[in-house]
Amino acid sequence: MKRKIPSTVALAVFESAARHESFARAAAEMCLTESAVSRQISNLESYLGIALFDRVKKQVVLTEAGRQYCESVSVNLSEIEMRTASLMSSRGEGGMLEVAVITTFGHRWLIPRLKGFIDSHPDVTVNLTEKAEPFDFKGTNFDMALHFDHSAWREVSITPLFGEEVVPVLNPEYFDLTKIRQPSDLAAHRLLYKRSRPEAWSHWFEIAGLINMQWKTSMRMELYSMVIEAARAGIGIGLVPRIYVLDEIRRGDLVIAFDIPLLHEKRYCLVFPDFRPKSRVTQKFSEWLLAESANATVPDLPGRIRR
Image (tube, rainbow, N blue to C red; front, side, top):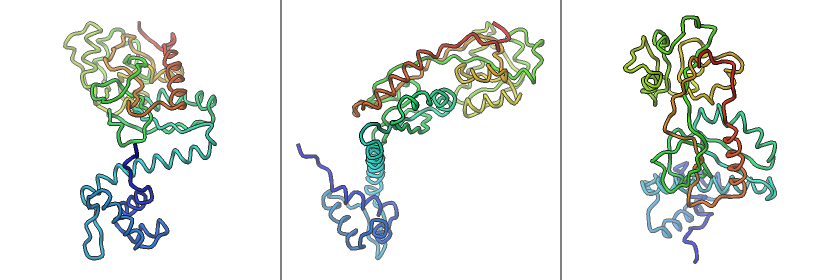
């Protein structure tokens, strides 16, 4: 069946005119005459049966329909451009992968390991974009996401990686460890936590056997990376995922105050859009991630001051 798709030339001209809200500037960018741009836009509007621009004297302004259409057209033209560049540069032997990832997970877990994949697959380009919340893959160029499992995901396939263990960490340079002998001793210090997990410390004290525990003071931060840096700076005691601080613990910059892990219900996972077939490159990256996650066990680190 023939696809109902407008001319790609008309779409490219429209995207340029919409971005500039000017036929003249689009003409200059596309190396066309202004009348040629006007004809392409008129032909596209006739094809769609919808006005994309309001003409006001010598100015053009996007209609609401035109603005919405431009958002989708722009994303897809960008993806076509990137895929084309990738194919040309690799001569069909490699590829490009667009991955959405949670910020701190990307910084702390993925990127330190990513060189292993790149060394094994030098013909593959992996582009990373931060996405803090679940999103709709439609209208994006993402091949996959490294994210949390969540009920908000729609029309996706999910492959679990591993769960999240959260532990209290501190910089021993700033604390007298002889005065931190039991979990209740942490309450005398400033407790750091991530904004989206306001109940985390209450839950941690509960699993440590301390119900309705009250503490001296606390400090909220947007990202786990902020909590980690604040703990390293001696501002307080941070409650953070164990996998994010393995290097700091090995170096002695941080220690786990009490190895009593709080297990969060959410799991890290791979998320794939159902409507987009997995490419050979996506499959390679997924297999590598699954192998890395299988090795994501926590070694017996020396930086734990209590068990």
